[in-house]
Image (cartoon, rainbow over all chains, first blue to last red; front, side, top):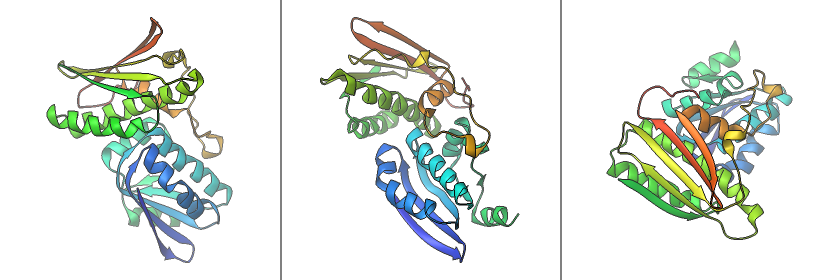
Length: 113
Length: 142
């Protein structure tokens, strides 16, 4: 599982994930992802377009970090989800807890709304 | 034809399982959706068994059997670990607000939601979990 980060503006960064958010992938990125998301008040957009599988442990990682982000008064938004990954997150009810939008532009628009 | 895989109840087995499923999906020409849903449901079920196997204090074996010949996909997981009935777990009340969410407990919920039927029996010292998944199309939602 690969993870990279871009600063989009002074208060917003985009974390790009690539690979499978299964047990192995989630363990691989856990520390860095949590460090990037949860330790400040920046807003974070998560580019999910290169994530082709997600298991409940990956959902837990997203959810716990979204909660931590909210506690820091920042926002976390997912974008670009592949249809089957979106289906799994929706089935788990996560779509009602973390905003999910089509692409980076829509995520930035959601932040500005 | 029923496809079988034997694993020891160790998390490293999840990678062995994933590779096996990739091969199986190619040979049976599963759609991307069927493969994804089968992998998700079985990954959650296997992870539960592996988590509970630690209580056994000995090596626990798991057999995964997939019957892909019918209109639906039938999977049976059998293990000789401690008794664990996922069908007995109450359906979680899904939170509607992030601050109310408690990360965790999603695995069995996903297994239920993606399955047409999920049954469990404990027989001759084994947990036997059977799940039936539909091919392609909308998920049954539990």
